[in-house]
Image 1 (tube, one colour):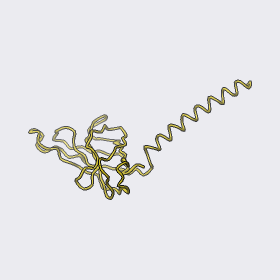
Image 2 (cartoon, one colour):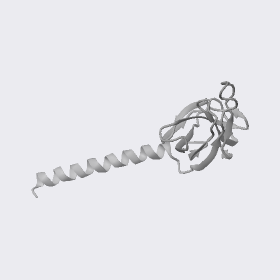
Image 3 (cartoon, rainbow, N blue to C red):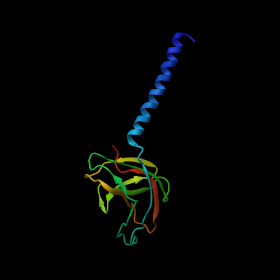
Image 4 (tube, helix red, strand yellow):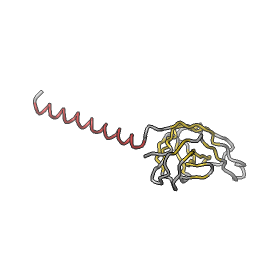
Length: 148
């Protein structure tokens, strides 16, 4: 190889390595390595034919070590027994009090979610069906109660 070909080749290798380095640092920012698995049942709605009530399901609790409002939480909704691409309404809760806005989250996606007020201690994921249905479904994935 000539010198110009060697330098072009080295430049190409350097660009590829840089791209992978940037991608892995972005992933690390969204994934602290403290992810906990979750798996629970989202209950059927009460009286779905009358359109009355959404019932809540909850994950097991995990410790959130910070009360900082700026410390979001991370959610990876890996599986829903409703099927691929379906939606479940979820939030961060302490007891039955919501500390993040209840939003619709898609199965198969990852999210970093802001809290609406500071919370620490034992927290859990709350969830409800996004539609009135007489069928419950299971959700599972990974979450980190406090991403820093």
